[in-house]
Amino acid sequence: MLSTLGTEVERLFEDLSKGVNDAADAFIQFSEELADQVNDALAPSLDNLNQEMEGWVDPFLQIIAQIEASFSDAVSPLSQTVDPLINQHPACVGCQHYHGQEYNGVMLVCGMHPYGWEGEECPDWESTWQDPH
Image 1: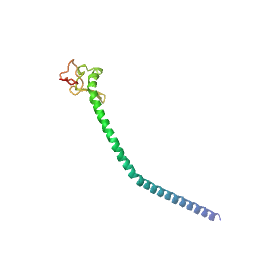
Image 2: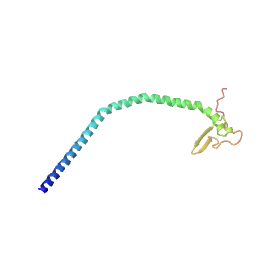
Image 3: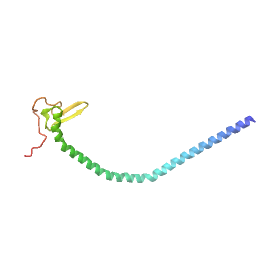
Image 4: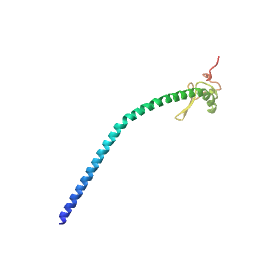
């Protein structure tokens, strides 16, 4: 009787396990099918939205790039005139070759003299400001 009861309990657990596995497999298959259907339904709309957004955003990005370039061009002479004073390169004040940027901790002062000119007047000095004449 005990062995029969043990066999019945074992069969019950096997059936229950099989049922749970079948239900889990069915749920996974349903979830995958649902995800595919949602993707198929939304993909064209999202593609259209993406194209429209690119059409709206691209002109703004171009305008911002133009403004940034204009601003950089407008400020460049000012920074080339003022920054050498701060960086202790008096011969570079107002020179169009002044760069004054640091790369890996090393200052690149200008295109002609990477570490700056030590004398009072640099032989390669050219004005940043255009002569109106």
